[in-house]
Image (cartoon, rainbow, N blue to C red):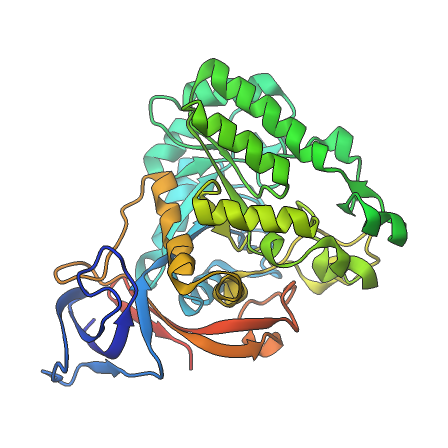
Length: 418
């Protein structure tokens, strides 16, 4: 792939061209020159777009795709297309398929599909066989095939000894074990945050302690046996405090939150719109404020879109009966850019690779081109026209967002929005 990116402002602290407007020449997938006014040497594809900014390629570790088993929700090839046109050059695929991703051959298959795409796939393997929480899956074999972590998507580890065994078993190859922070007995089939809003609406609530008591347990187990623990999708102020304290003790623990948990509070459920039914649930504004602070200071390591396509039959129901979940890749940049400064947004979108020991890219001469292209200044209302996923279950529909993505240049390929 040969191309010439014209008049682009580079946002990359590791690059000597950070904050400079330059041309970027890419030959055979390698950045061969960065300077002002590069002449097109051999009629390369020229990329010239309004207020063009570029950064190292973005990464999101929590992406669901229906295939195999739920192709009516979405498929892998379209998920890769959505990712590339949403600015992501690397994604982690969650194992909530049918059958679940629990064997080395399934990991290898997922990685092979992305060979001809702008986007690299980094699979998450199921922690337990069939994700049923009873017996550990073939963790070492999946790690050898390219899995970057192990967890049963949105299923808590009910048996504490299973978590202990998983942490001990994976110690030598230092791969994160995901423990979803929800005590099912305390949440007791709740459908939204327990608080003033749930009381007014007459909906069963999920209390903060259902998340926090699980995190307390997991930290104690980690402290006892060591290992590498990742707590995904935290949503409460006290969860932040618990993880901060664990990090101060030197424990090998990381965490993430979902972008929608930084954007919406539980008052948005007032009209019983099921697009706002997510897990963990939308919490209070106080929780949001503290989550934002924790993202800025790095206490929260990753912000994920938690992209989970669900067909209309699963969402167009009474609030109690609708499934939890939202898509999020298409809206991720615009939502984050509405909350944080551009410098912070790019840091958020690129720093997650460190958690999984993946190579980080940079926009510099001699590097492989792994680049996201965007305009950070455009304000718009996100609607169905902005959705590329087969399922349209976006929590951000009708929300005011800031910043549009032009596409990606990566893996020797170009993917641009029309």
